[in-house]
Amino acid sequence: MSGAYEPRDGGVYPAQVVLEPVPGWRPPRRSVWNLIGWLFLLVILVGSLLLNVGLWILLLLRSAELEEGIVKRHFSHTKGATNQVVILTIEGAMVGGEKFFKKQIDLLRKDDRVKAVVLRINSPGGLVSAADFMFHQLRQLGQERKIPIVVSMGGMAASGGYYVAMAVGEQSDTIFAEPTTFTGSIGVIIPHYDLSQLLEKWGVKEDSIASHRLKGMGSITRPMTDEERQIFQGLVDDAFRRFKEVIKQGRPKFRANPEALDKLATGQLFTSQQALHHGLVDKIGYLEDAVQRAIELAGLTPEEVEVLRYDRQPTLVDLLLGPDVSTPAMDLAALLDTTAPRAYYLCTRLPPLVSSYSPER
Image: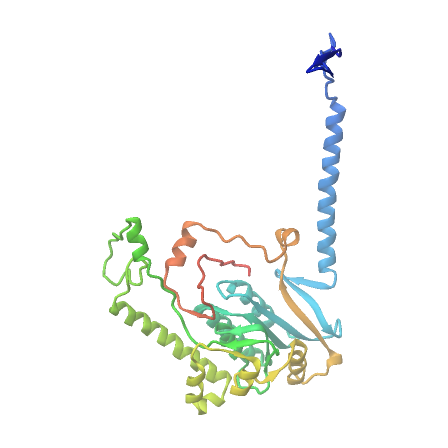
């Protein structure tokens, strides 16, 4: 190593320092004990993570009953009471989840302890078939078990969400909307986009081979013809007529005055106060008010009832990342599904662009 000072520009500066390796020196080898130590720490970390997840699951299910993949959580009133009121929740767009909904209905069918159901709806609607399936299952449950169904609307119970609410039947004071609820949006839509001009700029032309000119009707690669539009309008009109008939089942006043329903069935959203004024809902109230009404209709007192809430059994992914984390699959099946013409009872300005179907939700 050299460290002498050298004159530079009339001044004295330190010379460049050069470090030379010591003859015979070698870097130390990693001991096998170091590797064992690191592996031991890794095992401890993984074990700690699994232990915490296990404790979380136990804590999550501590006051709940698990049956057929459904978690029954205590919500309010007398814990352990023989008589039960169950809260079923419809959350988000109705673009799947019929399997889990049917599983809940089947569980209610065979549980004689359940004396009433409160349907909690926070949904903008969705597929016509999904909304109609849920409506049918609820109506059938009420008729078979002879138990009352009361609706509690959350932030939004529009279009298909309102459709399902009609499962309450003709019983009075059974549809509750919160002060901030948006509801209504009575109507049907089949989304369609014309991308022909965009594709023309890209030099893309449709060259499909079909058995009939109507086989590809509604294609996004060309403008819709008058014949196709008339056919689609007929599909929408049929679904719209069914929507209004379902409303007449749940709102008897509109059977006697169908013109009043026609004035409301424009796709317009209503506030809870407007909906109450027009007779679309019965009461302004919260979930606990709907629960109290269900107890009354069941002929019970609050002291002899336990209110439960049914939820989907959480998976490990739900526990680690949260139940709302989803990764829609952008595969060929999902892509083809988005191009199929579908009718929606849906309050939106942007129809779904990817499939978000999940068989367990």
